[in-house]
Image (tube, one colour):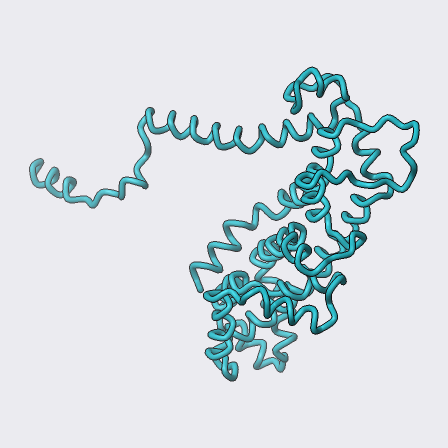
Length: 306
């Protein structure tokens, strides 16, 4: 009896190695690895923030980047926000991000909803058409000729319209829409609801997680737009914040202020550079915590059910 019980217990299938609870050594190594990863992210951000708030004497004593703060000096922020290039670039980037995210989400949701319905006319051919640029990225010369031929060069629309839809985001949203029970959509159709009413009243309220994640993806992409600005924007007053950051950090061009600088002591160059970096990163860092809780639910469900 005991032998039979042991044999029956011994035949129980074991879980995979990666699902087993780690031993104390494995837990310690995991804790050390996670600590190093977190430190690798937080320490550079801390150094950038502290350097941007340091005085000339503190930066000189540290020999460049400051790790331990010694007082707070916001003169670098006052200088770059004095109505010059950085302020204008922040406004351009905000406008591009807001308009681009709204347009991109609208186009992505409409296209994904149409492609997720089996009865849509030509949905297989349209899906293949969308997937071709995802596999074969279009060359830069035709893209440049199209943008300039439409008269979009040196305008905000040159940064908004070309990346208005991402095939990856389209596939994720389409997969999420396909996971919605067909009975809900059929009941809405029986009640006389149109496709747009069904999308607005049933599909979108059930898809808040994936919409929030995809919206953050689009917002980050538009906020970080740099290469398109390098291609399509030649006017200095139309530069987004990433273009200003690149021109200042790499080319050494200081942001111009609206007022004169005669008789005024300028903040140290390192503090101004780091202050520009902080203003560039801060908006995305501030928005991310509000959307982070949707990441696992939005991305994984949309990807698995696609």
